[in-house]
Amino acid sequence: MSAESTKRPLGQWLVLGTGVTLLGLGEYLGLFWAPPEMAMGDVMRIIYVHVPSGWLALVAFLSTAIFSGLYLRTKTPRYDHIADASAKTGTVFNAMSLATGMIWAKPTWGVWWSWDPRLSFTLIMFLLYVAYSALRRFVDDTESRARWAAVYGIFASVSLPLVYYSANWFRSLHQPHSTPQTVDASMKLPLRINAFAFLFLMIWFIWRRYELLRADAAHESTPPPA
Amino acid sequence: MENRTRWLVGVAIVLMLGSLAYVSWGNLGDNLVYYWTPGETLAKQEKVAGKASTVRLGGIVQAGSMKWDAEKLELRFRVADSPEPNAPSILVDSKGAPPAMFKEGIGVVVEGKLASDLVFHSDRVMVNHSNEYKPPEHGKAESGYGSKSVQK
Image (cartoon, rainbow over all chains, first blue to last red; front, side):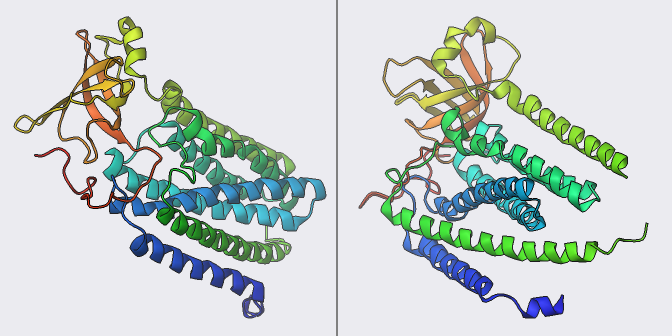
């Protein structure tokens, strides 16, 4: 454990450094450099956290699905660990997008929550991936745990397109997707920088969690007393 | 061991599917269409009007239709299918101050009941913002949140 933490790979520090630097720059631009929004004023600045966390939750869950598939093909435990680490990281980003969304909704829509398709599907996705972590806890045997989790991890990814497209496919309170044409250039730049900041931070979180899971697995291979 | 595992996983999956079903049928199921437009609501008014069920009505606050009674905290406006003046519309009667962004021409979703006289009695007014984000226009004061579009 101590040997592992002193020998952290250089790449990991680079990823963290890039993420933190971009986050600092992106949040500075979003909070101080970008103008307030015409109708919403300063409240709209939460977009620079809300939208990246939503995007990156989807990216992390996509990674769960991909590495679950790779695990089923190759039975390499490493892929199972990456899938698990991605699901846990994605769950955090998902929770953040729900929380910031509610904070944004209250002053603009007038309510904290409504059972609109986008919000409902995002909550369902969150529950699905909480259940993914719960499922892993239920299965003791390493190999069958990895197999069950991989199958479930692919199944749960059905929610991703539903969440992503729900605001465009269905009538909702949530606005449909913005496009580069509907967002002013002065707001696009901080949004993009923050999205990349969140991407690097997400990679770092997955990486760290992966290392912990690997250490756990090494520990687990000595069977516990019955 | 293998049997016990299967059994636990079975229970877990049933629990997960159960909670998912509860969430989706309990709330989402009857909301597969999140709101009806005034035109759709009027088309099936005999199903809705005067009934106890709560419905959502979505559309645009018709220009020139807003009346705010600051004494009684009563807000009346017409929700229309589109900004066009002859678009189908329904009169909405609501209590309490609306969200700060409420104004004529903006998108709204209201929850409540349609009375048999076709007045919609709303207990919840929600404003929906478009997907456009613009800086304030030059020389024009910020009109949105923080400033009052409805004066108390």
